[in-house]
Image 1 (cartoon, rainbow, N blue to C red):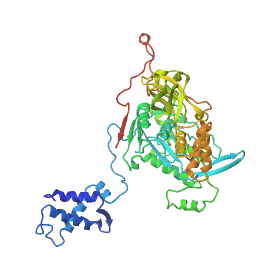
Image 2 (cartoon, rainbow, N blue to C red; image 1 turned 45 degrees about the vertical axis):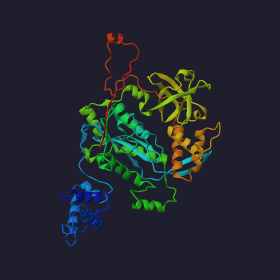
Image 3 (spheres, rainbow, N blue to C red; image 1 turned 45 degrees about the horizontal axis):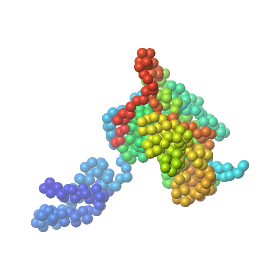
Image 4 (tube, one colour; image 1 turned 30 degrees about the vertical axis):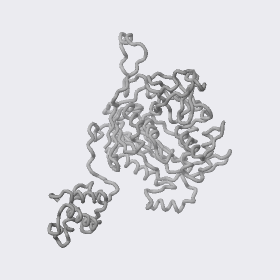
Length: 544
């Protein structure tokens, strides 16, 4: 093969296309598909000019044993090629990739945090009130638990429960926000359920950790994690490095994976309706036999149980922490070591900037037809008194800032960054609060002719009634109905406009505010300051 590299290229091609597969036998590695490889090997030898008098065609078996040895040697040059030739689904273990600019070991709290999502292994049920005093319950799909954990202290910083089949970038940002905002323990309604002594979340037990930010954010390669909005918030607002680890290697985030295993063992697998760890889990088979029983956990109960379980986890001793709990470890570093922390800037805390998102649009309208200026945003028209009188803005590009939790109001800026004011949705969309996801689903149902909305009907109420009707048929409809009900219930009575971009601030301030400006310097300034947008990002994004 040194004289004819085409023969080696043939073997490599056969292995890559899985025409030749490596398997583990009793006496070592075994190759399947050798007959086809040997036939194509002989044909290529003849095409290269070899004759029946040349090796290996001159041999009795025409070199099949040497071909087998060569194929094994090529297939086992590296572990990656051997695993690929053996049709392995994933690769475990290995050496951690070296990413320049990011620390590999967390030596202090808030140096490195890990993020991931976990499907809770429990069948859930929600309750809807049909008429006064009459309730009806439906099974929903398994929910997602999104969590952020600190690597050094093993403390859970925040979590978020998602009822959708897949979590989106908005859910990732919601988890980031809940890890920054000081935590308040939810009220408990289950009899006998209580928090353990000293249990809680870091931002609640230590006030100085409220709005504290981290340096490195580790996550997997899910689409929601790599979305542009997610990376923008992490690198520009939080000011941390975003490290997307290699695909199919959960061991790169061992602490969050171990936490999910612990939470499943102490909570999910001990509840009625558990699905176990898989189809072969005996606990799942037992629950399938008792499928007709009414002992199924409600969603509200699971939320209370999850809050207590995570708060108690932060107060439990860990062997890897020398017998300390995560909260005790944080207290040691804060009170005795007095570590330096970074905090989110004060203007961003007031405006909840993590909830708002940016969208590009244009001002529509027509002077000839007498149509006043308005903005079209996801199937609805928005306008205001000031915008409706600006004929010069028709056709001009604008920047729109919106809150995904309530899209009834938008804040609009022109291409130069000047604010045009707040615009309100027109028509029946203004009656009931709704999220961006709800509106997109309503428009999809109307487009597919599954939902009929006549004039003056409230589309959100029609959508809720549609989901209630189908809740008994499909678990996904019941999950969406509960998500929509909670979004309407938790929304404020009057819509609140998103704040838009922060005009001037010092990001990630330390424990003291910025030094006041001298009086002579203040006289030189006229009007508010606005920083220029840089051509490069303020953070780092790594993917390996």
